[in-house]
Image (tube, rainbow, N blue to C red; front, side):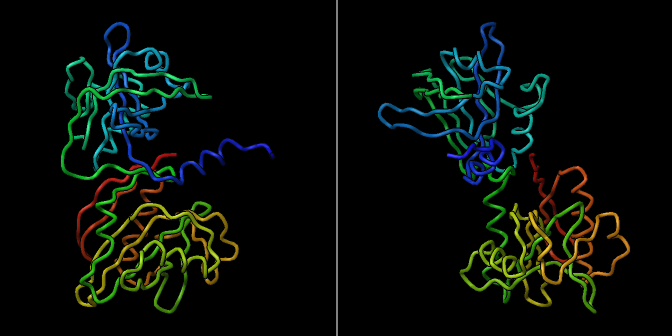
Length: 307
């Protein structure tokens, strides 16, 4: 077998869509510790078992490898900030996050769609991780959807569902394709426009858009939904996704316009101009927001991109 490149393997593993959890326990001094994990799975109903996989790179790795009890909180949509706190914040993580204490004294995250209190059942070495299997001693759950993660980004299934409007006369799906510090645009007599397509009824917006981009010669990775709005005058529902291009040389009719040169361009519609300007601004910090509304006004929901 040829040698496996770790980064490429990590990207391949990342194609699998998962939920996002925060795993917590107490160290030997009684201090709470925790980390963000998507390596979570149910194992058995009888006995009730689940597993998580702490990595050796964690500062709390020894604590989780030796703990006698721990808890898992499945984060809900909108809890991206909590995931980021437990993924990288170096200070007191629990001071920044609302939480409760279970009967074992272990914190569980407020607002999680489900939480599980566990006693350690088995710990097995597994490469650069350990497999920590817990026997569930108590659990709770609430209505709502869990926070999703795939391809290095969080996603919200509930917000994704809003990308299609079954009542609209026409559903148009497009992409803001980022490449080489700019965005792919097509020039016409009406102004610059984004790659887009009309999505037939009962057809996945993502599948429709992916097929269209492939026809244009674009090798892209589709990300989360970035902007969803209605044009009531046209009876049209628009949904635009974030995307990254691996190869833009063969993108028929499209050119990569640097973010620094977008302000002087004329676009095919005011809504497109505002959307592209927001995309360029948010791309600087990688803190993206989902827009929901109409062609003039609406509300935004934070989408945190992770490297």
